[in-house]
Image (cartoon, rainbow, N blue to C red):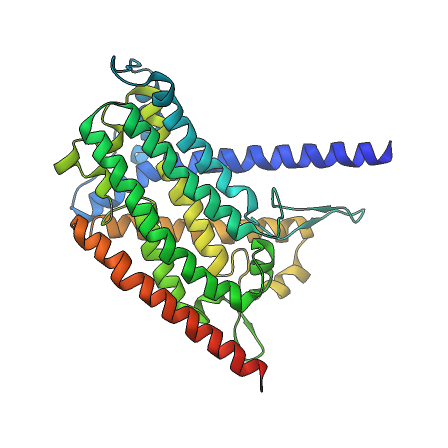
Length: 357
């Protein structure tokens, strides 16, 4: 009975944590659309959204109501099941990625019970993320093919080849970091970056693997279909890209999935390279505040880093013009993959050197 009670309480904790993470992801995705329009307005010397609420803060809700009350249209010659499955799969994969991310330090209750701020602490967390991200492109491909539209199909082909090309460089760049940390667990990677400074050097992986970070963030733009690598949604060539034939909630799913992916990618970048929930002076803070407040501060620090990356993604969109498709492929295969391989070899050589000292 005691075992059942423990299991039931654990299930309740995980369900609440999943609900909070999904709610936060959807909230960030909604307000990312507002932030994107505000950032573009600043870059173009405009005001941006300013009608719905103070500073246009209710604009995402107005957009959501408009989008979800539009007429549902399914083209006559489309594959109806796959047409609906595409955006559903894209949204599902976007939400699943967050399962292995440690959102903050464990909360220790007064009776000694530990509440983990991670849905699933698996030993292959990095591999899990790559698997789910790889499946995400199937949502785009299915929707593009099922639309029975040549522009959508071309967009789906671009998205697939782009994902294959850049996932390779992204994976090799992370191999170097995994060699250094000795673990595929996201919790372990975050724990090794405790604080900011230890043993005479920075603990954050960015300072140990700067080239891996640069390769990873460039590949992230391609994986997210963000400018300057938004060739799959290139409106000057492909009208609306893979969601040309979509409307109402299904279009909303694709748009939401894109912004949720941007948020989760920002959190992954923060966790892998910038310490995640760790920050300078956290050991001193732990002695000054209650354990639950210490965990909340860690969560807010991680969210702050993620929001900084989101704003960076947005500024890049309105700064750098779109690449040609051949330039995109050349960058991936002829520059990033060789760089990632060289970085991996150098990392291996340095690790062997220090082991043999």
